[in-house]
Image (cartoon, rainbow, N blue to C red; front, side):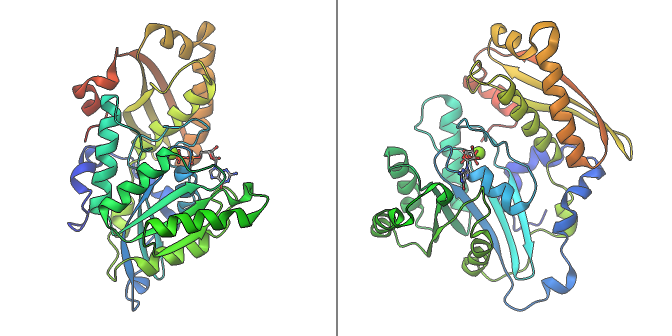
Length: 335
Ligand code: GDP
Ligand code: MG
């Protein structure tokens, strides 16, 4: 990691984890070519994605980085980690910070989430507000807007999900409203899901980032947090398999990531729930549900790794873990 990275300290616990070298496959398309870095007017920097839960932050991140790295779900609040996506282009390098959904403070976890959002805003070069353009403005939108106003950072406004709008002119009053509230560098209607205007967005990011060398070298990029990605995949499968039976209490921790052979890894994940009743739901009759979760997660992890793996899942009950500081720290969710 370069000393230029303001997130270095925060990411330290993940980065300290031993990451299988097979992770290199994952970033193949992001290799920094020396000839590219010598180009004139190279821009680089950190971009924070902020927005209400469900605005499409994870979808946008996945669509730009080109790999599935953050959990995407119809349910809000599925992103707990500040996962970074790094996008290296001939014109520069964009480091994306996917902030957790913005919430009113309540649970200890949510207070930390808020702190994480504010923290992320301080350390970045550009803030990107992503807003679901297909829903009307609510308190949550004002709250996110206030965060950006307080940060006084250069900001882009993304009006997402335009594919859902039958009448695109309905965007105009929304744009007017936002333009009166803040001095946006640019306002862009996009569709993260349908990949509309994403190339324009990437150019716009580069244009508004400061001039400078890439923050991450090719070596740094091989150090992606594979464990976190694996946890996110398992978490997504748990959420999908338990649909309305379990609220947002699940944390998944990758406890072991062992490279048995170059083309085979042994992985152990722990699924943390708050109650015994939830543990039973996750496991299912005769462990049928856990088996299903395991199969689906393994297929996706193998796709990510580019080779086979053995995935073991455990379910553990930690009562009230969301309010316990030491558990949050243990699971890497601490501030
Ligand atoms: P996050 O909570 O901000 O990370 O939101 P997600 O990325 O998880 O997206 C929430 C939901 O909105 C998911 O069901 C996405 O498929 C959907 N979504 C995201 N972007 C778009 C878009 O551009 N168009 C449509 N129609 N749906 C989208
Ligand atoms: Mg998300």
